Structure formats: C-alpha cells, structure tokens
Amino acid sequence: MTRSTPPSAPPAPTTLGRRVGAYAIDVAVPSVLLGVVAGIGAGAVAGVIRPTTPEQVLGALAIVYGVLFAAAIAWLLVYTALQAGRGSIGQRLLGIRLADVETGAPIGFGRALLRNLVWGLAGAILVGFFSPLFDSSPRRQGWHDKAARGFVGDAKTVEAPAPVEAPAPAVEPVDPAPVPQAPVVGPPPRFTSGAVAPVANRTGAVPPVTPYGLISVVPGVGRSEEVEPAGVEPVASTPEPLARVVPVADDATVAAPPRRRAVAAFTWDTGERVAVYGTTLFGRNPSAEDGAAVVAVRDETLSLSKTHFEVGADAEGPWIVDRHSTNGSALVRDGVRTPLEPGLCVSLRPGDRLEFGDRSLHIGEAS
Image (cartoon, rainbow, N blue to C red; front, side, top):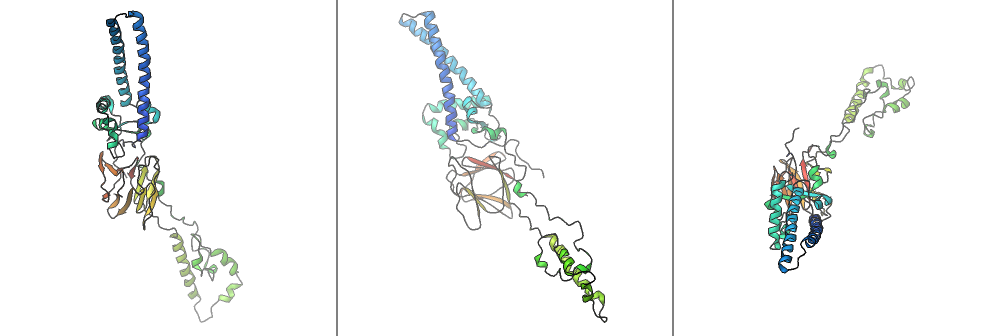
C-alpha cells in the first residue's frame, strides 16, 4: 500500500546542554583567532609607525581596531555559512545542526544570517540570551530561532531520518500452521480403532494416532475380535471411525492461535520500531492502570513526565491523549505543528509525527 509521507521529516530536537556546549566552542575559536590577529597587528603597527605622540598612538589603535573589526566581520560570514550547511565547528563536534521547522532541511545562508543578527540584538538586553527557556515545547526555540523559522536538532536524524514506511517487525504476519504432506486421515481404517478416541490429547498438526494404532491393533490378530455378527451389516462400523478422524484434520489445520492485530506502529527517533496492540501508557516511569500496558521511555534529560501520554484505538482508528504532562506533547501533520491539549483525544494517522519532551516518534501503518 502506498503511503503519503513528507519527503524529509524534521529531526529530533536536541538538548539545551548540547546547544550551550556548541556555542561555547564557537565563541572560543574566534576569540583565540582574534587574539592572535590583534597581537600580530599591534606588533606590526608598532614596528612600522613607532608612535611617540598621543595622536600617533590613537592612529595606531584605530588601525588595530579596524583590522579586528574586519576579522570579526569575516568570521561572522564564515560562521553563518557553516551554520547554513552542515553546522558550525561546535555544532559538528556535538552532533547538532540548524534545521527548518517543517522540512528538516538546512535553513540557508540568508536565514542563518538573520538568526545571528537577531541573536546579537536580543543579547543586547541580556534577557534575549535566555529566550530558549521561554519555549515549553521540545524544540526550545529562542527569539532568533523563531525569526529564522528554524530550530536546533540532532544532526544524525536529519541526515538519516527514521523510515516510517516499513512496518514494525512485531506486526509481521504469522505463518499459518504447515499442512501435512500426507493425507491427515492417515492409513486405512483398520488403524483407527480405539487409538483415535482421545482427540483432546493431540499436540499439533500431526495426529498422534497412527503409531499407537500400529501397536494396539496387530493385523491378523485383533481384527478377528472386531468382526460383527452375521446379522449386522459389516460396513456399519466404517463410517464411525472416519467421522472421528475428519475432525482431527480440521482441528489440526486451525491449531495455530489467531494473530493479534496491532493498532499502531511507532518508529522512534532512535530508529527503533515497535507496535502498539492496545491502550498503552508512555512516560519516564508510567504507573500501571487497569486494562492498559505501560512503556517506559528512555529520557536522560528528564524532559518527560512520569506518565506523559496515552495511546489507544477505537472503531475510527488510533488516538493519543496527553496525560497533563509538564512539557506537553505536539502533533506534526503535513508540516503543521499543533500542541496537544491535555486530556483531549486526538486521532492519529500514518505519516504523523509526535513530539514530547526531548523525544519524538513517527506513526506508521499497522498491519
């Protein structure tokens, strides 16, 4: 069956710790470079001009500051170009990158430059540096991120998005019980006397009656004791053993239990695929409830609630309910991100993406 899924799914949001670490590296690199340039420039100017008057000193300082300003502008352009592609030096070292909020693709040079300019202006009032903390969604978008319509995600999931087309291994069809090559009725009717009676003792598709028939009824010996009197039709005993054998064949054919159908298939941001077979509670450490399974989700950043959300199904298909989680949950459908209202049941369909805390998953088609 053909599924309609977006060409590139957005990556899983990264943590604030990795973002701060990448920014610290990106600040340290130009600081060292500008320090080296300033030292070389000051030495060169002092050696050439040899200022002795205040005017000459101011002129030398103007030259040094001009060189530093030009170097800073050059670094800003290089830094922006790196962010617009695979990521800056710090981002590459920590495995994160900038991504479009809808497609997951790189945001490009223009939007990356706009993001850096807004970041610089927001930092002028100091509170702008903490704007990512104002966003309670898993993406933690600051003012600069929202202005550029981007966010910082995991580079690995951007470059190799988890496929949602393949069904989970847990929902693969179960092979039916093999049909015996030989007829299930077995040998001629002479081997069916007495040994076929305990039908309830069968263990599988192969009837366990033939070997015992060979031992309990010896041809030429036990046969004479079963002969009916002359006044009775000899064929009257034949239908009864046959009627007792046919149900054995039918029961053996359907001995395999019916396959349980999954209500939904998940592909996690780690690439792991699982199937959901009924009402299930997901969270960091969900509490057991009557009639519901529980799944503990790995959450090293403690971004998930103990019981974060619930998934189930009805006649219309699978659904999700946010269980009043702290950081909330969001549904991304056709590129549109919609926060889930706590306690409200929302239907799911293949191709949807769920975001909760620092984790996410894709909805596949159950089989």
